[in-house]
Image (cartoon, rainbow, N blue to C red; front, side, top):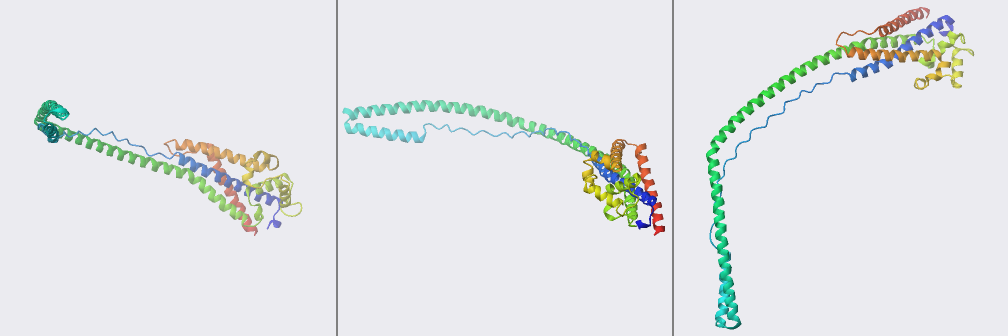
Length: 347
């Protein structure tokens, strides 16, 4: 179809395509950034702190009656040992007639046994006396605790009732504050989500319209498929504006010039490379450079306005620059529809 179009018509088509490509590029950058802004500023669910619980009263220990100590006399094991040893020494003494070495040994042994029994008996009596005194003291303490136990148990039950009542009040207050907080948060979140949708809606609508109109514009096949991109369209449009080309095809056509400069690395074709080398394209792809710089500026402007709007409680109101840009994209789509009408009539 391009053969039937004049240079002026091709220039207008390239202009419209470049406008739509630029709008799509800008909105494709701005919408995700806006979503990130919205996500980052989503209200956080508040934390409702519960008052620390009061210490639960401790029940009084029930008194335990002390065990009476064993105050028996000489331990039976020691008695048996002493009796055996005494018998041995006695037999030795009898066998020697209590004379000579055997007699001396038996007398000494019997004496030692007597001393041991006397010492042990004395120590035992002291231990028994001490044990009885400790037992009596513990018994007195037990009796006092036994007498006071009903009173202490009653006091504990009263304290426990007060503690349970206070704990219940604290829990009810906490549940009330929690419910109020959650309700307020839901209202805040709902309002924020509504505001977020209002922020995104005009941009998403413009993006859909721009894509749809650009697809329809390209559907007439006046531009070869390979060159339907922001870098290619703006570069070829610049060829026409500067007078370097007056047609798309042929040895002096824009396609041929574009491919020649691409092979010589005079121009850059891929967007991901262009975004890293804006200074490089300023000389040879000035129109593309201008559009990308403007896209960056608009994205920053919308990002700043998004922050301001999300931090306010009032209704959404874009600033003048953002509103002007949205109106501009709308006008570009309106112009695209007029061009489409012309193309459909020409075909």
